[in-house]
Length: 153
View 1 (cartoon, one colour):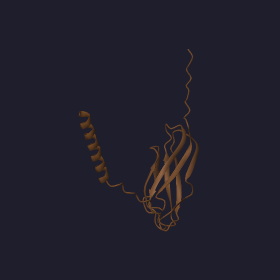
View 2: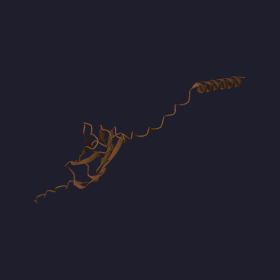
View 3: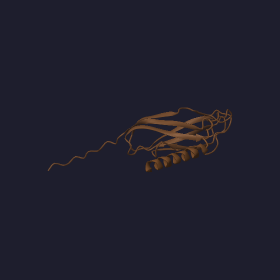
View 4: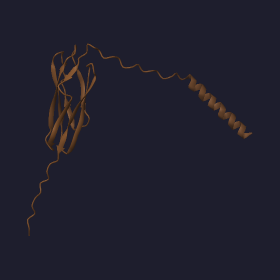
């Protein structure tokens, strides 16, 4: 008898759960991204990857990624950030009008970072391509360890 009561209770609870699930609407389908505005500004970078080559550990390395707005509207950069704290971009805060040039200045801090450089700078703007990624590469050569002679006794 107890087994029959437990079975009936489990079936009733399951039926209640199914009824509640049926009343929950299906998830709303997200609309696909809209096509870019053909009249928006457009970045044309001289280069999107810069290779510093072999550099010594210690001094900061700097580079300007230059670009031209080849679109029909002004570009306003809302944000630029490096893929880590060692990569620091600076960008124009004023709109870059069609036909004008601008630059993203990138500083890479080499101190304490011997080894390969492979970092990104992500730019967010109102351009046709709202997110643009720039790359820096290279190799940081470690500081040479100065050896001091120990006088003989």
